[in-house]
Image 1 (cartoon, rainbow, N blue to C red):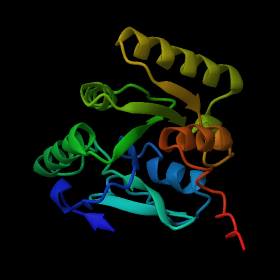
Image 2: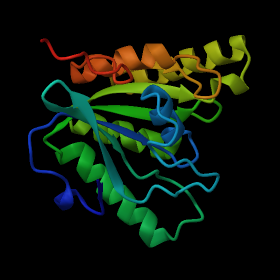
Image 3: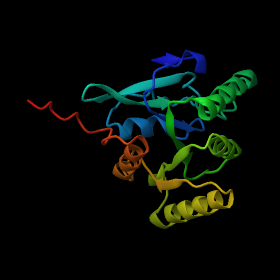
Length: 203
C-alpha cells in the first residue's frame, strides 16, 4: 500500500524495515535487488519519483512476517521547495515516531556519501534510537581500492558522529554485497532471508 502521510500507515504491530536515502542514490534498485524482485519498488531515471510511503508485506508461514518500507527520496533540487520540505518532515516523523519500525537501511551513493541530507537522516536515526545498516550503492562504478577507501572513510566519519551503524559496499548492477545485505536486514527484522521462498507447510 502507499500512504501520503504517517497517519495513513497501518496501525497493526507488524515489524517494519525502512529504506531511506537521497534521490538518485539507487534506493529503489537496492530494495528490488535485496528482495529478488525486478519491479517491486518503482525505478526511474528521473530522481524524486518516490513521493509516498510505500509499504510491501513480506510473506510468512501464517500471514505477513513483516514489511519493507520505501520512504520518499530526499534532497532532489528540482522538486519544488515546499514539496521537499514536506517530504523531509514526513520522513523525519516516520523515523522518529513510527512504533513498528525496527531498523533503517540508509542508502548512500558510494561516490558522494554523507551529504548534508544523509547526516540529517543519521541525526533522526540517532534521535529515534533506531538500528541502522548503511548501503554504499553503485560500488561497481569504483575500483576495488577506491571502494574500500570510500567504505573506511564513511565508517570513520560515522563513528566520529557518535553513531553506531553497520555499513557495506553494494551494487544492484553487479550483485556485490547483495547476500551480505540480505543477512544484515534479516537480522534487523529477526526474519528469514527476505528473498527466500516461504518454507512448505508441515503436513
